[in-house]
Image (cartoon, rainbow, N blue to C red; front, side, top):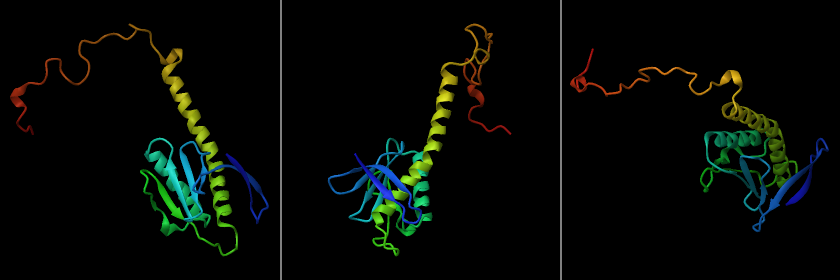
Length: 174
């Protein structure tokens, strides 16, 4: 695991990013709990993979990430497509920005900003899920009943005990 320091030229802000370098020379950001981001400097691409399952939530996160990168002017909007790995999205970034910045530095800096902006959202979602799980598994006294406290009824549900009568099953009733 590498810790690289990236500096924004406009604001002068430095940011440390935990990143891995692969044998192929790509960079892997695994800080987000739902996404893995691979920056491929040789192909000038960003590949975003789901960590666990491909769900609507993960796809929306991927879309949000690329919308963020497009708004920041890092990723070319016409280049965003699905990747060759199931559930992945990819987008290209310019080879040489007009300001003369290092494109890899700009991409990693903006990805780190996105991940940092997502941390409070992820924390609140986790806290909500934990509260809901606790409410289901350990209900309070007013939200629970003892066994036998609820009276039994002779007939429950919508399906009769002996089934439906078959004499009218194949005709339309108006």
